[in-house]
Length: 631
Image (cartoon, rainbow, N blue to C red; front, side, top):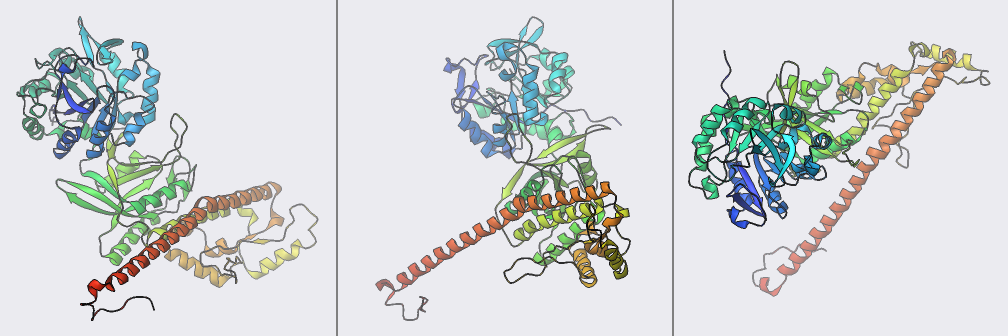
């Protein structure tokens, strides 16, 4: 069975000049000739219109200075739905992404002195990501060839538009924008030869602009490019004051010709078929960022809990909670968890459902690095399953740290690779620091403590530990150690201490750490099992809490290894206190101060109400009033 024929789609635009939406009425963009531009509505009107009809991939072009505010207004109206071009450089590209642009469009920056710079292309692609970069190869025809034109199409560069050059650019960008400058704004028909050539040369989404003056041009571009090139209308469109093409007819074309059958269309390359966006509670984001910041050189992982909400023909993923997982293996580029951890996350979601009465389930996972194949495997069970990446230790080209949060899904690109699908997300502030937030924040150091303790005990050579912990063997070990204090590393057998949140307190409230007896060891093992720390179950509770280290039987290298591991262990715990426990306690103090200020404000309001009730205006009708003033 053959695949459906891809169809050309209508792609809208917003051209900004001096802060207003204007359309080109000639094939030039000379700043000195204002007669060549036609003023229309404010930018946010068009952004709202395109969002209403879900016309993704629309491009906002800043034609000269003084357009930043208008462009930002567009992005605020439809965040993650519009592309921004005009004056984009390595220095400001990420700024526009952070401002809400789905992609940035770059041209002149790639041609210093009108000569193409591959180094600049590589740099900006690395800075914002290939999937966030569009290269504008707008051109003029010279003889039988098309030459890329820059600086408002007035300066010819050294790059020809052909298959070879487009193949090079394709390695670093995800889309092309091509203005046929010779016919742009003239409304005298498209450059058919260029459209046909683009259909033969391009392998990524491509949008053509220039000369379109009739609805039939969509059909023409579709036929010439075999559906691989999309079309933009300018001054001919009625919403820009034109008379030959109706905007509603273009929208109807998109609906009638099923964009989702076109594998080259941006909606299929960068959008999810089932989810329109993700909503994340602010307290959940706070926990995820704290979790990601807990370790610099190791990947972390958690399970996102919430539900899916129907919105029209698509759904929204709403994240209301997170289940933190104990890692069985942790490295810079990957993390592993036991299957029992996933089961515990599902059980936790069920418990939240029973406690709150609101359906809660595992709807995604969070980490610090992309894993497209793992994401795709999860989507096989539920196509709505999402991934969230909290990247906090990455560095840009200027070596300045930043925290970047991304929601995504995955789709198969071919038999050997997967493609990233970015999902727009918004942060909700409905329940900041609710009753579940602080316990989760305090759970982070507990999880890391468990992981460090597990790693420490696993590092002790098996030959150096006693097989049992019965009293007779312990006594024998102690007896054999007597009189050996003069020898190197001749210590008495060491008994590990057990740390837990339920440790006893002294009179000043400090935690008292002491060896754990057999009875309390069994009790702690039971509590740990109830708490869901499944990754610790592979170490017997009696061995974990009362492990005896026979130093006498150790070789010197093993002793040195043990000492080093002990130092690393203590250093990790110190870092944990500095990076997590301290900030968490400070947050609690800040919250207490905030609550105190709120109480004072409420007390002041109460006194004001009391004075108001006692005023002469209320005297006549105040016989039945209750005196609520302080005694």
